Image 1 (spheres, helix red, strand yellow):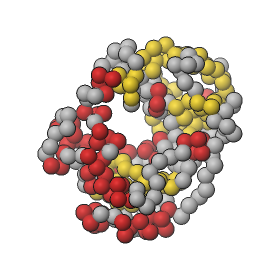
Image 2: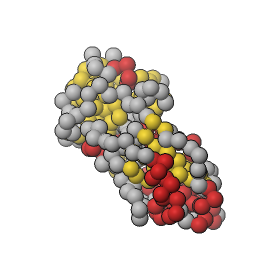
Image 3: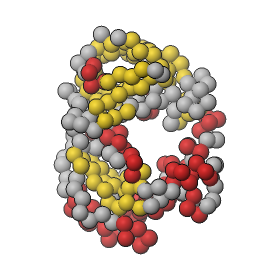
Image 4: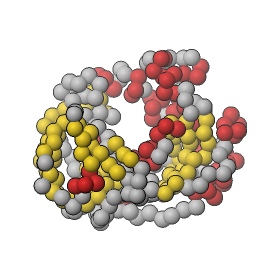
Length: 264
């Protein structure tokens, strides 16, 4: 089987295990079905996910010009507390910002390497947790806009981490935690503006990833340095492909790269 196209983050479907899909123009591949098969990845070029031009990818699948211009790459994406649509104030495109920011958002705890706090749109639960490689997660608050979620995350970060150790996550060096207990401990630190949105009676969500073999020492595949790679796929976790020789390939960080994919 052969595929060619621009990389976008893998689409997922909740299940036991989670199902992963690579989408190409007019075609798709269920990656679960090719675990234990040989994959050959060949770098072809770039295609900015916004303008479509063959330009070097700067961040998030966009070329440098687009990254500093389009509303979907504004600073409030990574720092929700900077959201201003609720004040009717524009950053780059107020119509777009209202559409994204003025909808229900979740502040959550996720355990992928250690417990971390994060923010996502309600519509992205549990997708966001899957993308982070979390094996368990729980909602803390559900607020009506991104700004309230952002200031809540900022307040909680003083008491719990907000980063994932991706190497630890990929080696599966993780410990189950009582997220209900941790959520309840953090309740006292939620900002006054968001206290009424605390979720009291929910349970942890547990996620199972399709992995036959975890790497013992992670080696990250960089297509700019290694334009052709071949290996046996052993699993998928987060947005990473895991290969038999301990190589891992982060699909998300390679969005906008055009590849050829051969499966044998």
